[in-house]
Structures are given as structure tokens and as C-alpha cells.
Length: 527
Image 1 (tube, rainbow, N blue to C red):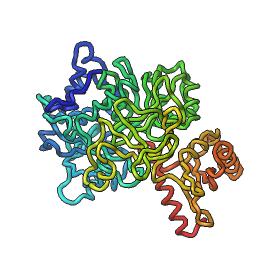
Image 2 (image 1 turned 30 degrees about the vertical axis):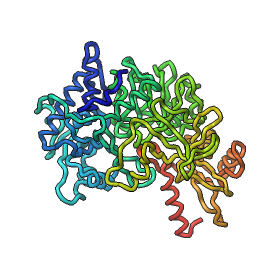
Image 3 (image 1 turned 90 degrees about the vertical axis):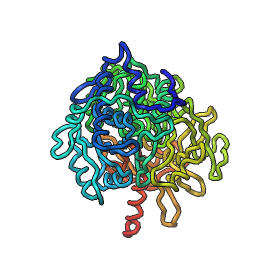
Image 4 (image 1 turned 45 degrees about the vertical axis):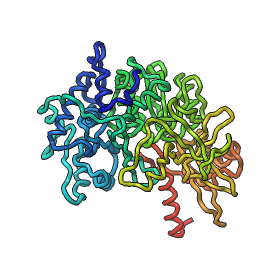
């Protein structure tokens, strides 16, 4: 993989990603395959350059924002890269949000235009109707554009842009909104140098992606994890990417794995658990998998081992963040240790600190902080949170970790999620992992709840495996199961069986919603 020209004045990340594939032997190879079509690298570069001209012709100026509410089709990389070529700031957003969410992001980002998939246009129009002042221009991808600009027509009407906008590695290139696992999402500003930094640090050394790979990411492109998986990494080396517009249900994922035979599959823990429970799961000889990754939430040890036993391929579990753009701490091929998040990705430095900012001793729990070349520069319009998260060269993750005797990182939960039971800290992630190891449990989330004496104890919300009915007998069995695996004080005093858990679109459990529900119940006088 070629190195990124970080010192080059005028550096444009989109131009870099596109131009490295316009070479003999690669330009006509397939870059993207979606539900309806496929694009060569040459065709992708042409479409992106036309998008750059079209967006500029509509009056969008460099450094103005363009909200992207696009499903995973070839139009996403077309518009995302085209905007960056023109110096316009694309802001990809979750495609399953409410009109209220979109209205907030439109107002917060002050987007001058929005590119939206036709299927999502009704909810976006509702969001636009809630805005005060001039409404952003709407560009519709796929389907009829009605009274709005149609992306297909715009691309056909404009010639490819000549020279890319001269930016620089430290100038803003795009935003991503945080997933909202702890409240309102924050506009996270990334620079041109960040995209290729993730490819140089993780895509090559850890993932080992090459031009011969076919990749499929169940995590969508609007997610930082998915953006690296399905755009940055494959374009950096000339690999082929499969895109799926629909939700990544087990049925859809199994169908995609069989049909397109990806060699690299990117998932999240919940999806791996659901795939292993699916009767439609392919057999090993039906697939060509050579590498699998997981992020978003810690991968339970049991799920990793079962996947490896099924396919003979380890899952490289790691952790990244919107603020760091992709994975900076990961297990690696040949040294996978399930139950841990591995070691620092090359190019990143990690430390675990106490509340005073001092390094903790190995084995002690503290907050994980990271420094590396892909850190965001700020949260838009949020000075206080920016100052808290981006502390000099260090980025605070809000995740609690400890180091084992061999230097592997063990996840202990979010800082806001840690419980203190009997004066001793308890990691919700540890209790959740113990619960998930039981064959009757598909998913679990643990929060703190006050008992009759006002003391905090763990409470578990459990989604049972298919065909399993939650009842008092199972609850008692699960409590005993946790007691057998962990110190007795860590077992959940209450177990509530639920159909599903509140999550962000990136798969992170929103424990704060569970806590809020408990608070509402307590306020209503319920037990």
C-alpha cells in the first residue's frame, strides 16, 4: 500500500483514493457491486468527478455542508467522493432515523443541500418542513425526483470536474455524526488526512486487504466503521466492494455471502450472534471467507469461538470510534485472544488512566485514551464537549479498560455504565458476556438498579435465543450460571426478558435508555 502524502499542500483525499486505481490493469476492474448495477474504478472516478461539477453548479461552495442520507448503493461513494473533490463537506447520516433527528442534524450542520435516497424522501421532507428559514436543496438518488433535483439527471448533464479542490491534509473533508449512545449525536469533523491514515494503519497491517479481495460490510457506509470497511480500505488497494441497500438481517447477509462470495466480511457482535442462530447460515464450503472483523460492541468470547469452529476463520474484534474514524485497538491474525480487544493498531498509542489522569498499573481499571493520525479535530458547535474529548494529543474514549498480564486490553464498559456494588466496581460488559455464554441467551444488557435499601445492584435485560421462552425458571438458571462464572456479588439480582434491546444504528446498546425506563417506572411507583 502506498503511503499517504501527508505533507503535500493541496492534498485532496478523494482525488488520492480515486487516482490510485486509474492505472493499467486496474481501471476497468470492478470497484462496486450493488443491488442494481456494478461500477469499474474508471466509471466510479468519472461519476464522482461529474458529481463534483454538478454540486458546484447548484451553488454549493467549498466548506459548505451537504447532508447525505443515502442507502448503500453506488450513489453513496459517487456523491461522498464527488463532494470532497469539489471541496464541499459531505455529512453522511444514519438512514433509519426519525424526522426529528434529521431536522436536528440539518439545523445543527447548517447544510445547504441534502442528497437523499428516494425511499427515504418522505421522512426527509417531513424533517425539512420543521426547519425555520430557507430550506436546503434536495437531490434525490434513485426513483422519481418529482419536484427535486434528480442525481441521475445531474450526472448526465455535467462534465467531469478537471482539477480537484486544493485542500490540504489538515483541512476539514467530511463530518460524521456520533451514534448517540449517550445522548444527542455530535457532528464530528474529520480532515483530508484521516481517510488514508486509517488505511495505512489498519487496512494494510491488521486487515491485510489486497486488490484480490472482495469485501462486504454489514455495517453501513454512514457509520465510521462501515466507511473504512467499504470505501477507504478497498479503494486504497483496488479491492471490490459489495453493497447492500436493505437492512443486514441474517437472511439478507447469508444471501449476500453466498451470492457474492466475499473474502472479507465485516460485522458487529449482535449480527454474528444472530447469524450463528440462523438456520440459513451457510456451510464453510459455500463461502470463501478468509478474514472477518467485528466492532461496535465487545465481541463475547463464546461467539468468537463458535464462529471460528464453524468456519475456521477468526473474528478480529476491535474497537474504534466516530472520533478516531476507525479501529485503533484490535486483535490481529495469528494472535487472537477472545475475551480481549487485543493490542494497539500500528500508528496509534494507547494509555489507561485514572480519574486524575495518571497511568494505572497493569490489571487496574481506568479510562482508555488514544492518540493517532485519524483523530477528529472537534465537535461542531460544541466547544465544551470538544474540550473534554480532545485533550491535547489524546482523545478520551469514555471506555473503561484494563491490561492483562500479557498486555492485551480487556473491556470493562463505558465510563457512564460502570456499577459500584458493595464498594467494588462491576463491569456491565463482564456480566453481559457471562450471560451470553448461556445457550438460552442471544443478547443481554446490564445496568444498575437500586434495591429496597437504596443500594445499587446489577439488573439484566435478556433477549432469549430463538425458540426459548423467558420465565422464572430460566431467570434462576441464568443467575446461577453467572454466579458460577463470576464473583457472586456480580450476578444480576433482577432479570427482565425483552424482545429486543435499544441500540444505535451501529449496534451499540443504549443503556441510558434502559436506565431512563427504570427511572420512569420508579417514578410511577412500580417495582
